[in-house]
Image (cartoon, rainbow, N blue to C red):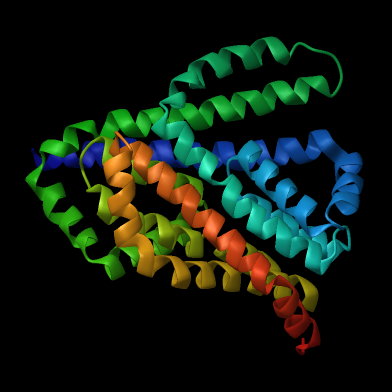
Length: 309
């Protein structure tokens, strides 16, 4: 493949990623604006119970397609006193599970719905009052799916490139693949983008099924950067909440990594397609993080509450 062609693909992918991130931010903002004060009051009541807070985190993340956004929102709500410190911890665990929706959307080829949602949004924007905001939210969701489809189409020629194959070979080292997931997610501020691109890379045979798993696991650590950065300008409670989110994900990775080879082997045999297998592993990993998180939630909360500012 000519060097210019590789550059052309890079520009196309970069533009689609920018579109994806822009739509994610707009989507999250519109959901908050549409919900308003009623949404904040509802969150305050529901997150008083850890299990309910977990499902709130999972549901909101599946809706806005970004655990980074939900984690950042949770930290801000803790700072404002809208939700409790302990309630936010369960929201973080739920957000990890909710973010797996992106992997399923890509694996099931639901990205094809993007243009349909964009057309639907035009009709909804003509509705009166706040209902029109949902039209804009539908537009953003359509753009998110369209951007993923654009990325898939743009990288398709790369599977025949020896240069790209040489670069992708580095991901065969689990530590390098883990680092790629962490830093790419921290840079893009969205694990949804990284996970979506990782599954697309598997679909286009740019990277092997077993290699991409460590990238996805790393993305779970990288996604905590949003909450950590957001908390720097906030109070002690918000910073502790962001730190707890990081601890949950690091503990989950430490527990899960040793079983990846055997679990991947089982999934590879029992799941027909590699992209679907990645989606299954991603879900199992985040359920593992949730189980580990709930097992240490009370003791971790007590330690952080007693810790100094």
